[in-house]
Image (tube, rainbow, N blue to C red; front, side, top):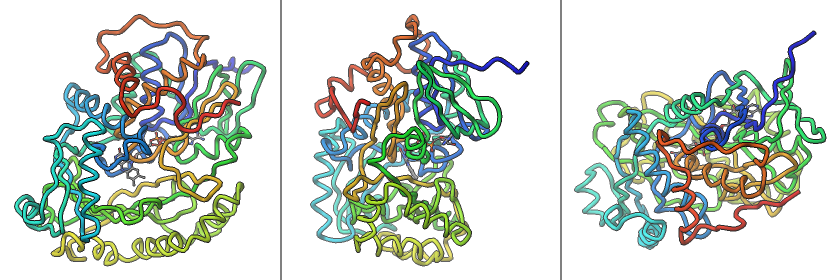
Length: 456
Ligand SMILES: Cc1cc2nc3c(=O)[nH]c(=O)nc-3n(C[C@H](O)[C@H](O)[C@H](O)COP(=O)(O)OP(=O)(O)OC[C@H]3O[C@@H](n4cnc5c(N)ncnc54)[C@H](O)[C@@H]3O)c2cc1C
């Protein structure tokens, strides 16, 4: 006779920063068996461990159109700061200088300052600088004007996720690694979740936090066909020590194509002190296509023509998209293309200063029926399941607050009535009630419906 089937009250698919933080909150509030199913052998192997590593302050996020990420990032800043201090994790407050390289970009900087204040940043955290003031701060940087966001901070989100995982395990969460979910079967009052090989587990409720696979997973359950996605690889180059030591802040430029997933590369300071430039945004076949093209060309064509086709067809007739996508392919092959983009604000940078490739990450951007890239996270509710799609940047920054509010919504929707509440735990670094109160009373945060939350 085989082993009895493992049964869980709540199962999260995906051990990135999103799924891991959510598991922590559930274990803090509820008794019951909670599992995180992760296809890899540890957490944060994909995007959560392969990003720029910046705690983004929300100056560049429109307080209305990007309110979910703006509020989550603002509240999470304080949460991560306290967490890093108590856990002794890297926290390097280097600041970000967002430069305008063209005169017509300058008005954006004052707008960003206003957004920063509307999103809850303090007046002394942000300042608009002239080109001379930028030179005093960073002599190697040239621009027309800039916004200085003093509290942007370099961290290591992989270390954050691993640490939150340990906290969750201490509170009883089961992390089942090497468990690639391939199929989900619906029973009358539970779901059977199958790995590629081996026995399924049974769960009363499932939360899809599968990052770049979240769209595929919801499609496998027969839902979410109004959305599709494309994957963009972001590559970085490391700067040699001589040039690296000359710039101490992150340098970003005002994005020129706000509605497309292509940003000009930045100069970034890693939490261990390394300097890199990147990322570009190279269209690739899959969410784990960290290098190469040729072997995956057929896969890329299949990805572009997968169901629902209509969303991507609209995108494929957008000339800006096609032009920028082809330029990004060039930047993947030629380091001088990447350097040229950064030379717009660091003119002394040369191709010989790039000493090697850094760790690439993949952004999976969701596209709607009109062929638009969506800017906010999307939540879709299904029978016994809940799905988070398009959880993109600054998602790592916003994860603790976003997942607290996500859990609050799930509780309100009655998803966890099968679980017993736990007594308040005074040893927790983060306080659930405080965060939910803060989010609920925030001027720009929707207390009712937010994102797309159709009930099925
Ligand atoms: C290039 C780049 C730079 C970025 N820089 C920043 C930054 O500086 N600051 C910031 O705040 N944000 C940044 N972001 C965004 C941030 O990294 C993401 O929002 C965040 O990491 C998403 O976390 P996640 O848990 O949703 O996804 P992931 O980290 O991708 O986690 C999803 C997990 O699900 C697992 N999984 C998937 N499918 C299955 C399956 N079928 N079965 C089992 N497991 C499965 C995967 O293995 C993975 O571990 C950046 C993103 C990119 C791409």
